[in-house]
Length: 391
Image (cartoon, rainbow, N blue to C red; front, side, top):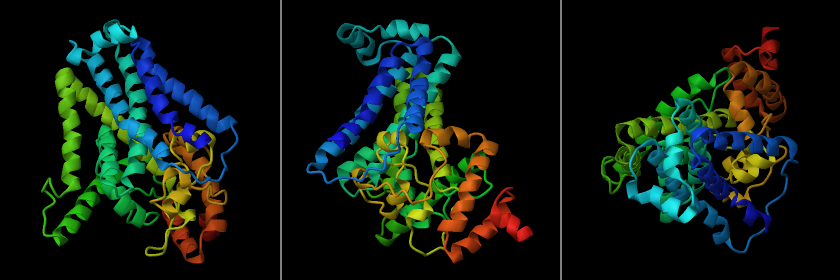
């Protein structure tokens, strides 16, 4: 029964964020501060979740909270853009005042400093990532048309619908090899990685779809046949919506909001496979992903943190993923790693011992040779393989 309840943590967080943002002013920082405090506390102070998934009789009850995320994101982002703009599009302010007793007009007037909007962007951008991208990731690993439709629209909130193509058919095939843009290399900072990953992942998604459709005699620019093109149209549609809600300033605001949400994803990509290597063509194993069994990371993020099992069995629903306590482990939970990755010296100091342990205890002999070469090229101090080689 607990897993049924845990599935609603993300929708509950979405509703709580709406309530906070609706107060306007410096309350715009409340969503980010709340997530930072509660999420980090859950990961730091609650026991690691090593529970094994039981069998469930009704998968619909586990899928239902996933499906609520898209309408919740739509309402949250519409409300934010409404507050950034003027007027009362769709009568939102009047309806909320009449039915919920909250004054959005006053909240809009209170939000008169760029620092307030900065907090809004960080908090709502985070929600678009942990709600839209994490849930969209779960749904776009499936083959059902409804799940794919919902998942791709969720990814549009970070302007990243091509993730549904590149992640499933590119990243999962090429993970932990130099050919994978979403696998960070040893010695690479997040700031260098995000540029490389973003550009190369988009290009590879285009190449994958172009090649697939060419075999069917169809064009990648055919909207009826190409998920690549339809996804880009969905991205653009949200920019058009932002313009109609809040004009040119709203368009710029949405661009920043989508960019920040996308960066949350790229930071996650950055630490999920950082420095790990695999012989191209060899099977993907649990050791090729950094895992985390921290309570908050596991239960709020639909078991995304059980990343080792996810890559070993990409189509497995979130409620069936195992803890894999013997897999390579991150030194902190997901939100902690997100903050740590923004400070390259701190990140490297924490990940270096973990890489040393992986090289020594997890890597195969062939992988150890690749790891030695990667360590030498990285220039990272403290990697045992580098020191041993230099000696």
